[in-house]
Image (cartoon, rainbow, N blue to C red; front, top):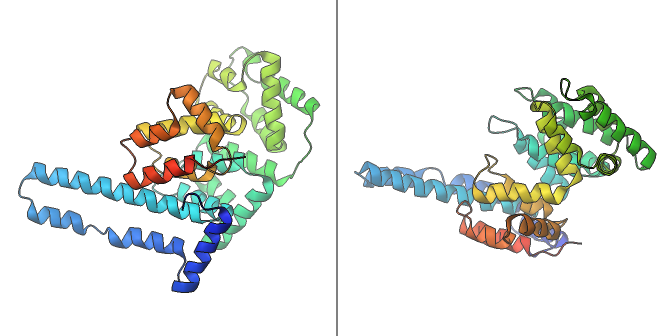
Length: 321
């Protein structure tokens, strides 16, 4: 399945529905829910009189459930078209009691305005909710919300032209409202949000490149020099994802493979969503930074099921433009 093109995957999905009257993605989700309903845990409890033995069985079953969920979710995402996939990722970002802002950042910084519009349409049609409004209403409040809404405003303007002059002016303003203040009270959030809300992603990329050319270092580095709070931390993540995606995704994958992230959906989400975009570049960055190939790292990981390892390694083998 990993080596099937987007068109072939849609054909498989359509053929499955024609033959069995059910969407293959829905079937995968139902299989996940129905096949693992806790029976194995109850059986283990009945046959085990030793608490240590039961705990080991319980741990084994939990690992089995996690691996099964991982492969089902990854296959589901792979079968969906890009707009459906991102809409589902966005919906899942609000589940489990804590908003997964990084998943939303990846969508808002890495998609064209036309693509984001389609994502929002699918989201509204399927879930009967407005994506931007769900971000605003997310609890507890977080600085990510202000940044994401600013980016949403930028996408609505449908700007296409990129101006070196505007980039230079914005870079200077970022400096003057940030490290140019000499660390007096951190950065001016309002100035940053205004720039984010009025410039396209491509224009913002040029601005950050111009900042580095003028001041000799990345804007994210300057943020570390400031009084680093929640807003600065969120802004660093957003800019890294926007300006240097391969570096951002390589680091995220490393955290997933090592089991040092609470974002349990990140590995599947990233491998699937970037497989046909920039996986080659991500692998180059990964190997340079961690002195190990991504495929080998996935294969050696203790936090990924066997089936998932094979699938993710296959995805990593897809040649990207």
